[in-house]
Image (cartoon, rainbow, N blue to C red; front, side, top):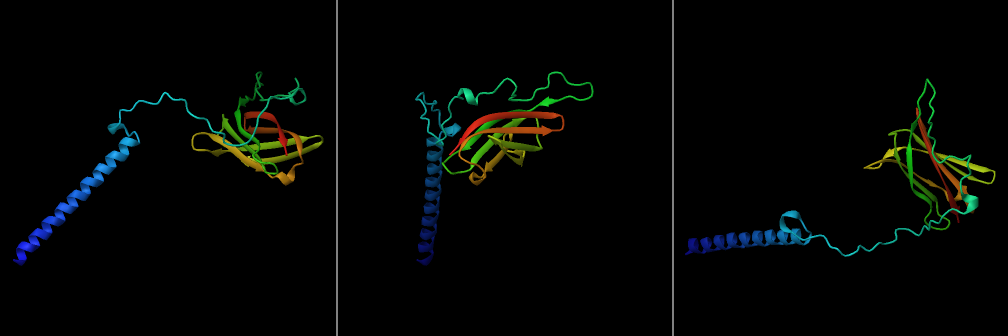
Length: 183
């Protein structure tokens, strides 16, 4: 009698375990299907427009005439007539961020760089007769090289500043300037 009862308990355990494994497998297939995992979903991409959300409160506006570059200023140093002994390679710099996210906060500077993979970014901020210089290393950002720096608000005064980010690494050079408002 006892052997028969043990066989029933063992077979019930196997049935319970098999049922739980089956339910887990079904749950996994369901999750993969609703997440559009390739083997389980043939769902076409939505033609609905994607809603754009604002990431920060920085408002960029066109430069006013007093902020525009004069003919003597350069946005990027591109030596088109190299000397016989040296050649200058242009560095491409794209400012991803240049400004404050909040009043009284630091001035965030972030740039994507191509043309160099190491060296230093020099960040210059000028206003009236005041010039502040900062430097940071060029770093690998996961899919591109770049520079990131936060200029402390306490180093600056309120008003319009000209931010210039420049790179001078060996024979590679480049710079970019932007007018920013510090509040």
